[in-house]
Length: 470
Image 1 (cartoon, rainbow, N blue to C red):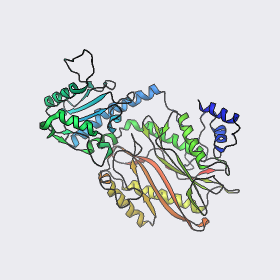
Image 2 (cartoon, rainbow, N blue to C red):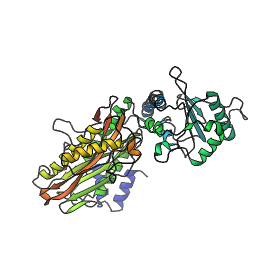
Image 3 (cartoon, one colour):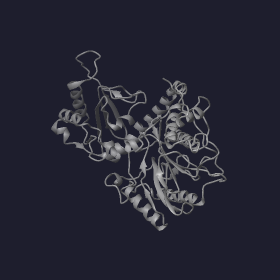
Image 4 (tube, rainbow, N blue to C red):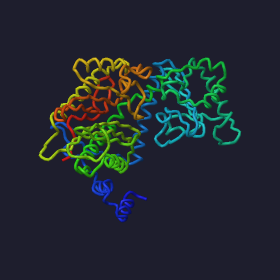
């Protein structure tokens, strides 16, 4: 049943007085996409954020296929050579895919085919990296399909012992000095070889070839985490759409103080994202705080501070954003100065973190430097930033966890690299004089990119002003 039909049924059932249904009736009626109101978080010179409709599914796939070709022809050879890997083998079965699979496959491929084995063989600068598929398709012409020249059944797909026999013949002929397999006890992106698949693969290669196997987690992590510049324009549009949605969510178009709950706003965001042809990678989280009330759920009242954590997926590009809003009291034109100061302090902490995210530093080194700068400026805060891109919590170095401010073993020891994207997630806690000195954690998160030179930029822009509910 469609959402419209559900709403009609709900009205007929005489439950239209429920806050969420009333909210959907007011805001989600089919029609032109609502634009962000003038209260969007921007400097006075910035225009309000606007919604960018996605292309047709067919055009999306064309664009994503271009990105895939750039990654396979540009990123993959570079990381293989950087880490001394001559051959990389990924083997998986349908519905038990390696996490890297979705960064190697065409946008029209949704799962592995029976057993899919992908082999990447670096034949040197002149010949380049050969891409072979033993099982599955050619991913839009980007792989060469490797088939049995003498199949038992004409036209049959590779399966079982024949597939493993051909893999061994292929590897013996290529004679690589090093063979990388995705096995790692810490990094999920480099640990995609399932236990049973590993046993079968090792048996197929045999003891002699297995002596050449290396574990190089950075190969998978850096391939998945590196973002070709061609992806950024679309990502910037998606990020602006996120800002526009949050500006509307934290406005009088959606929130009616004393009636609308934090859960109503969460479900409005879920519904609106679906209408725009996107989805979310976690359920939106909206909370309120007020004098004498710490962050939590409930009915939104005038004088409340609002917070949202919101992440969408569009064309497999993931976002992660946290914004703040304020519900004006009668006679107010803006938040109290104490709240403005809290937001400004969080903006300063964002600047400190970006300044310390220098390529070549590890995540833990950037964390220590940023926390030292934070201490010098007298900021009471927490830093827990992470890579983003093909996944919400993406491949690459962690820059703190909320409960590991001393550093993150192993995952924080990875190096920050150019051509990567990060969610700058953090909070600064400040006393609010207008709330009798009550301390409030102003939590923010914005996506940033490191360009090819390593310079850091906001993908769209950051929040510097509260969204206002009038």
